[in-house]
Length: 268
Image (cartoon, rainbow, N blue to C red; front, side, top):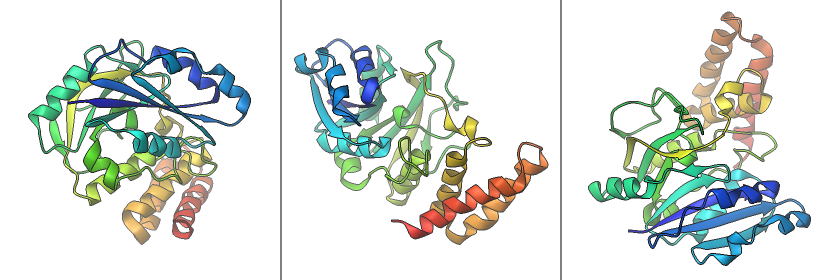
């Protein structure tokens, strides 16, 4: 069994990728998808990314994390793919544990693991028990850096929705929730495993829901993607409950949620 670790980076972030790489292993390869917005950033590419045989570097002029992940997926050739950011630090036993899970479950398409901060604090309120997943977990929202996918099945049928995610001008998060919904609709076999595979410094966007218009628009757009016209009463309840709790004002929040719904209705 082999695994491609897909590392997505942009502009100055490329200098951090060397710290993501582990010592060469026969079954592990790295695919670096590097977006740049100005050619001067190409001078920052570390020599170590071009000198290692287990690293393949692809450069693109543009931005948008979802688009970058899709580009990296298209270059993958291994049995499994793991998503990583340029600030990720893989656990020393990550690949061994990942291989063990997929060998134990031959029909598994997507496995979800755990992530922590650099100080070892769990990134989210993860369940303690291993379980099969048929929908988004109740206690947390999955992130791409927690996912490992069986390439042949997933890459053929799934892509990140490029309207969502970091680097987009309007819907600044939510790409993982759309991915999860698409995986569910396609009948993917998914499983959560309570094993940490990565450390990160990533700031969770859900903590910014009450103060970030892009996050609020994303929440409205996700609701429409999942529920259709039922997104309107869902968003009304969401805005009302937050306003009643004194966390925000009703009308500004509802305005942004509505903008997300209308955006999804008018785009493909």
